[in-house]
Image (cartoon, rainbow over all chains, first blue to last red; front, side, top):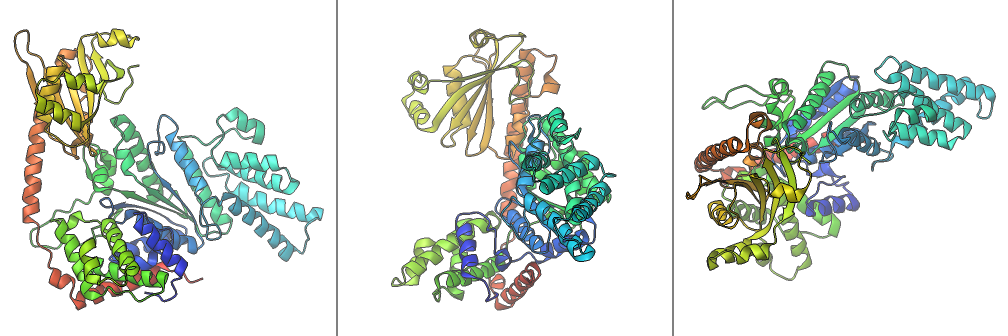
Length: 421
Length: 212
């Protein structure tokens, strides 16, 4: 492990894992057994950096590390100057729904926009302000004008409108550009209300077109039907604003599978299909979408994504398993299957957790090779089938063991191992 | 009023919780009563499926002939056959029972067979995979244009089929489990294997970390 891991990062990682949730930081230090997956996803990142788009489904059982991988990638691309955003789907947030669930997903995505300078959501205003000041700086440096001069304002406005009008040819781009321009106008004239209205519009908070027309002069609002087009426009805009691209993480796709009515599920699958087609047909640019989904929610032919024939034919790996022949994984396929960590990988993971614990508490852990093996063997023995044990369960138990062994240094470690195993 | 969780025509939401203490008192067998008292958390009369359109009053609705859908929330899993038998004894009417426990679901139904006959019951086991499928047993497309008696017969047959499917799937699941190859822990924890995994983890760390 890298010695540069800070105490704060190590503590954040251990605390989150102990609570059964995926840490927001330091994920790279505990990424074990996911080499091929990381390689494949980083290949996508490279495509997005070069103006392309990518979409992936991460499939795995509960606690197998889907969210972990999503967050690891999120952090990575954020450091690579991407704008990242994430949403956890739920009863109230879907791709489409009859109670505005699609729009709710969009709102959450906009609210959760993050950049490296603001890693914990709410980065939209920062992106807009940074973009305006970058243009202002450009005008100062290249054109030799200074703020306050009328020529300065004119030149900045010209550059702003050049960018916003370049978006007009895209679907809904005319109104989107107009609203961005309105945000700038509010910034320039000190009209806070205009800026707020523009932000409200971008966040999908306008309920009626009339209201939007009155406030901003646009005839369009973000709705359940068109929200994905706006995500594409954002991807386009953030690149113009100096970022590398937009990376969208969608977690808990199993929520769609749990929709009781077939009609409701199929509407959502249809929306996923149009996003999938859009991304792979090259209609989207500088945008990556990564979605996590459970095996049942994907493969169930009655209710899952595979119940929707157009998606099944696109996503399903139809190769048949042959006896005695090792199935080679195609990591370029749209679905990446996460297999549970095997015992050797779990060993390395607990070893890494021990090192993080040492960093947090500044001590020399008493647990070592034989103790790791003893712990893992007892965990596997608890459940007959190794596949039943998720990394999440194992990690939580092990951190408890580490905590106890550090807190009760005077007790023999064998006693603590026996008590916690 | 007809919009609800189950995809059935002419369904009306009742949403009437059953007073458990009164229900329990009516169970004759002391052992069964004890099981009910400790394991049943709630019984709710959720829907009434009738052949009559346009009912707006719940009191009128629950007096209508048809199929009553009850949701039974359990604290622990117990035999659904026993539960169905007892509930049929308590609530003598055509009904569909939906048992919910630990995120899993089972269903049962009681189909009366005319006066003087005891009627037929069927109930499935709990099975998480079928949470999804079973809700759609009540199917709008199949049931549209049919009366409640026909719908009830279809539900009965579907549940009987479902019961078989669950039994077969469980049997296969156990067979698969028995045939699972044992993990070679000696190899897994060998220094050679661990060194390889460490190396791969280092690779991931280096690729995911972005130098400032």
